Image (cartoon, rainbow, N blue to C red; front, side, top):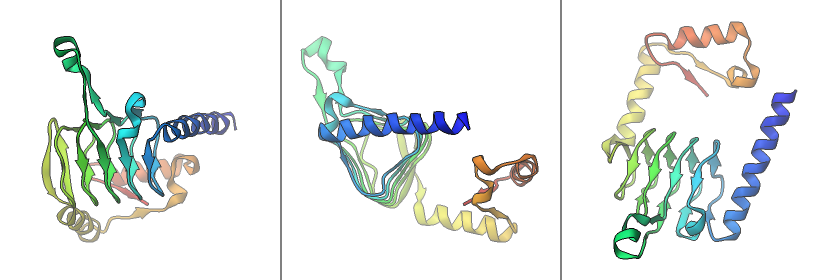
Length: 182
């Protein structure tokens, strides 16, 4: 019970923070899912646009400025950041100023995105580079599920619904391979 209250309070605090950034010019589309805390370039949030149906994993950083030139040239670089619709930004990714992430694109966890990423690809690394197309990746996942007769566990296996038996089933499904949950 206390855990749920703490989670609710954290979500509420995050929501108020995001609302403040939107009031200062951050552009968020519909159905943007921000999984947990992120770093938003608050001083330049008006340069950041996230389109509809984007998922942002925890600890993602959105930078719309680069102050590395300030000490040497006495000015700071600014650049728009645009994440187009139906994209997924992985855990702890960093999106640098002046970058557009194309629609239907996945940015891998821990990636540093320094250049535009086109539509419909998977990009990962530091600096991020294109790994494969989204279509090819999804076909690979579908093949793994079907060829290896994988169970796709339902919402009754999500974190707040787990008991020891369900945890054991998830561990077994992911041992030596990949498991799946909806």
